Image (cartoon, rainbow, N blue to C red; front, side):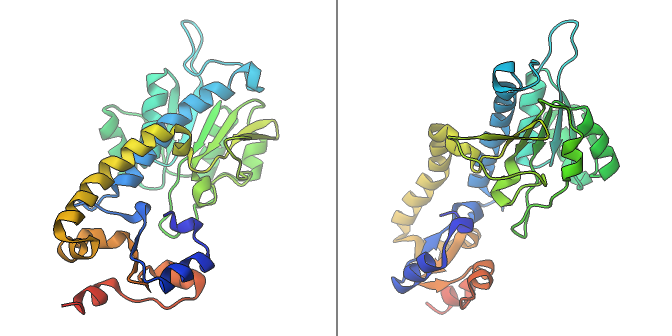
Length: 282
């Protein structure tokens, strides 16, 4: 379950039924990483460049340019805001297509890690508003890929910055799942994926991986199937989380008790520490 989509009535009903519930986006593995989030981020990052290439065409009211350019014609300029998994895979796809890539992030560590993972130097910068505004003025594609640990992605691209972008350029706000990092972003759908503002095409579809459902389903199954088989062998998920502490981060309801602090704050419901509940069973 996506915890961001939960409603209070549904949560209370699950609590009444004494359900133990797990959320995909907070499920950790032995290394402490989030395997399902990573898989979905890889899909989203790879997909944004395919989407950008589509909307740059004249048929979609774009600038009518090829993302990678050809011999004698310079490539399109792609700005990626955020150097996490989405940003890394967007950069990989853009480079593979021949685009010119520039990456912004406030974490120098993440920028270094992105360069190391890709295997060569890229143009990178911290999120300095004047530099960002200057680069946005001349880019063909701008991708918002900033995550957030607090629930709301920071808005780093102002309406004024967007208004100064070239007509026919494309904004893809992957951060729309957590509110968006462009001030002009509004949620769209797979049925009506874009809108125009200041002559700029905005693609703000939440949950981009759902458009590539078979790949996404395989990615989720690769993580969940071993977990379910192991739970069956251990006598259920409750026995499994007793032994494997790293799985506890994904549990937000345990036998009807709410064990997710941010959900308890959001819906004003009683919070119970999961570790105390598990310790009390023995």
